[in-house]
Length: 280
Figure 1: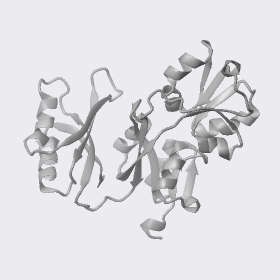
Figure 2 (figure 1 turned 45 degrees about the horizontal axis):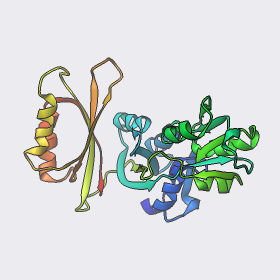
Figure 3 (figure 1 turned 90 degrees about the vertical axis):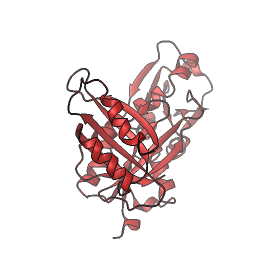
Figure 4 (figure 1 turned 180 degrees about the vertical axis):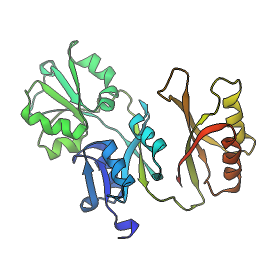
């Protein structure tokens, strides 16, 4: 099986934003999509080569990095980002029966990130003591509506409502109308240079409390005129004050200047993980 015909695992079931991004990536070839129960299962299927590729959300313009994804990629030995898909997110409030009365809604069910992206709308339009219940996926939340009381509504995309024959009560309830989720296509092989690439890396420092460490790290790129597209930090989880830094920058790891920058950066870091070089 060649790379173009390979199975693509995604966060299922049908109707998730992940499936929507997967369909765009595969040019709507549903037969090669393989749904998984959670993000870990998607990535693990690629890590163990059960599936050749996977697609996972890695960042949202509203809530930031998807920690479950980035943590797995940092610790993985053989998964690399090959491509990214940017998907505009339109969140819908979905019920199992037709209604126009928002006051009837007593509980919202959805994936935590989806709920967070609609917090302002929920506070403004629904009852003050609304119950918020987390689900593994937006599509699973919609699918479960048929077994729940009519006072329960789900947050998901319109495709979920269509697949499950549910009612879209309100469209576009996301707090920010230009809400976009960045999805990563991952596999266990590295991309060749395309000539117009970006690279994602993660690193931490050998010493965590030395003045100017972050400046030294960024200087590795600045003095070579390498453009940084993104920089952020996240706690390592072992103790307060220890962070892992995640950087996206222009270029491919096979580029001479990029290789030099990473070599210099490696001298002050204890962890330096290339998450992938991929076309912009």
